[in-house]
Length: 279
Image 1: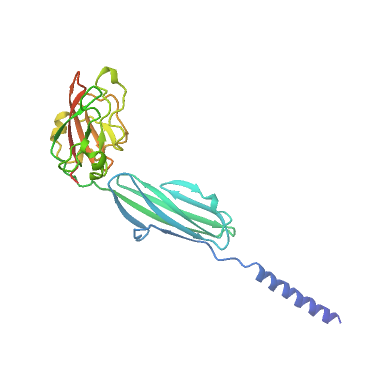
Image 2: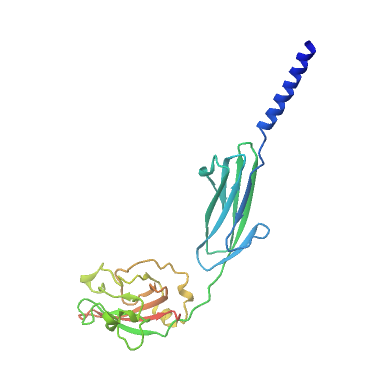
């Protein structure tokens, strides 16, 4: 009888051990993958050329049957803990990486640890090359007289995209469809003392910046090479003066430059010379 009890106890002990082994298996370790849509990653890196400050999108995915306990992404030495992934068995994210306009390698690493202390990582190096964009020729210099508030040509406009056979005011009303948009308006004059601080070139959708270029440099410009690195961000300008050279981007995304040539006191007219990208 004692032998029978001992045998039953032994069988029960084996069953318990077997049951525990089946109930608590250690899941497979986590896996991480990183992709760069539109680019091919070779040996953990890919090249990208930029002509200005830009961005690139990476997409990484994490598969963690053992449940994510810690997830970190490091971009160019800056670490960030992704708390939204904790407690999940899978996670994916679209990562926007800023690319400076310079030659530089940006390292990106994704590291994950699951609740069983199993870890995995994936990394990619973005090799950034600053490329000088090809110069685009500028149009021939054009002189335009623009009117201020005391001028017969008040609210005059300049636009090099207007079709032949149409004047500036002809593009209103029934002929508005002849052109997609005006490049710029000149609405108020700040060359006169009474108008200081007013806005110029407003309601155009264009962007402007007053440069340090001289009149000689303006007249010698044959292409947009000197304009490409300028930060052109102002919606309008204030306190323009004779002799200034102003760079601009039209609302048709054309790069251009104008020279404030002369101010006609008493008429509120100014002479503006202008050049625009040929494209």
